[in-house]
Amino acid sequence: MNEEEYNNYKELYLPLIKEYIDIIISTYADLLTTLKRDYENSLAIEERHFLNYNNLEEYNNSLLNMYNLIVDNDINIMLYDTSYSNQRDLSFDVCNKILNDMKNKYLVKVKNMDEHIKK
Image 1 (cartoon, rainbow, N blue to C red):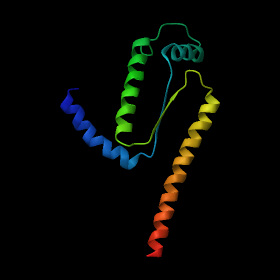
Image 2: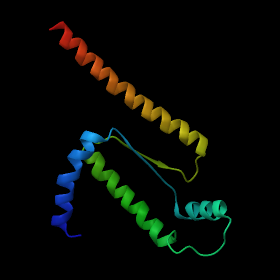
Image 3: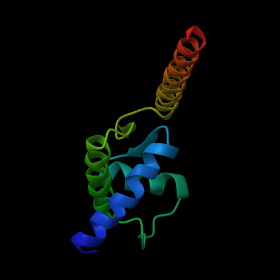
Image 4: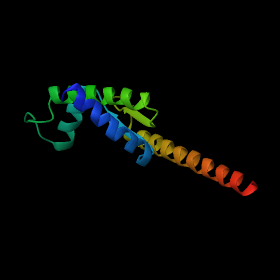
């Protein structure tokens, strides 16, 4: 993708993301942890064709670049490095972030309604 295409996509999709997506939550892990988890979960020891070191490194780098783009455009995003985290704790943390985000949005709506009623 050349720079002009990239800028066109940003111009098209960033406003849509802001309008329709409340929060972006994504996870990543260091390369060895990811490969280890994949082998443990699949109970297979053969080499992967897609989930390999190079693709994982590209994914992590892309995710971090996307994070910078999203933060620079004031979009709510949470990235979690799961390399050393417990899945259960991560689930609770994600739920708390989502619930907090929902609460804040509803409080703003209630405040706006209250101000409208007072007028």
